[in-house]
Image (tube, rainbow, N blue to C red; front, side, top):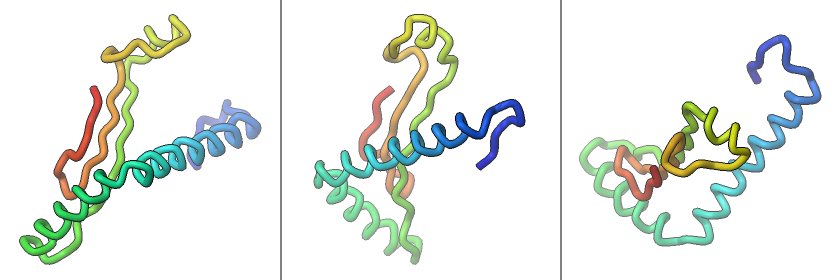
Length: 96
């Protein structure tokens, strides 16, 4: 883990636990929605044939300029975030 020296060990531990929570929520969502896995498998088989290796299956979450949401103490949709599930460079599903 990398963190600023001013971040306490307690906060660092909470952050790590939160990270695990987010990852597990994403994995649970994908597992509960099998069509995401089905599309990924199709993409992987097409891309593997063309590239001769299996492409990666990724999830990305981005929060930028979150000050407005922090100020309001709730997420202000479409101002500062995106979430994408991508396989082999092919966007399977994304919210902006």
